[in-house]
Length: 191
Figure 1: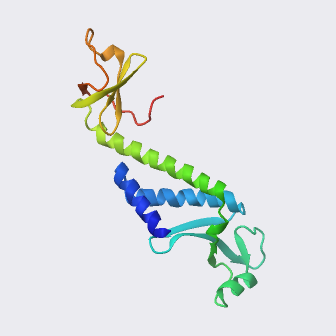
Figure 2 (figure 1 turned 120 degrees about the vertical axis):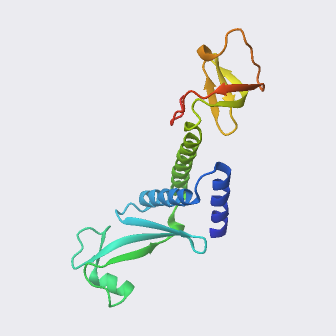
Figure 3 (figure 1 turned 180 degrees about the vertical axis):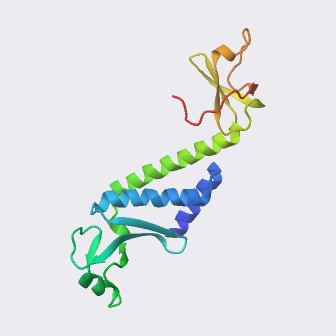
C-alpha cells in the first residue's frame, strides 16, 4: 500500500505542479484530523509516513505516578509493562495506534481535508505564477460567457474579462484565440 501512496503523491505533485513535501504534510495532517475524530480520547496524535512503512499513527502519552488525564497520561506501571523498566516518571512514550480501526467516515474526513489542502496549494501556486505578470499580454482562448463577462482559458487557469473592459462592437465565439492584458490576480476564487 505504501508504494501506491507514494506513486499517488508523485502523480498529484506532477499534475498540479506542487511541492511533494507539501502534499506529504497535507496527507499527514488529514490523517491526524481523521484519527482525532475516530479515537476521541484526547490523545496527542502523531502521523509518520515513509515509502517503506507507509502511514503510521502514534499517540503520545506522558508517564505519571497517578493518571488524571487518561488521554494524555499513562501510569508508570503500565508504561513499564509496555516499554520496559528503563521508563521513568516524566518520560513521553509514542504508542502505535491501529490504522485498521480507522473507518470509512474517518477515511472520508481525511480525503476531504487532503483535497482542500491540495486545492489551496494549487491556488497559491497559480497566484505566484501570475502575480508577476500583471500588465503583461497573454494569449488565451474564449471558453464561455457568464452574465456578459468573458471567461478566458489561459491554460492552467481561467481569467475573467469583464463586459465593461471588452472592446465595443467586437464579437468573439467560444474557442477563439484572444490576447488579453492581466490587470489583477486574486488569491481567492470569486463565485
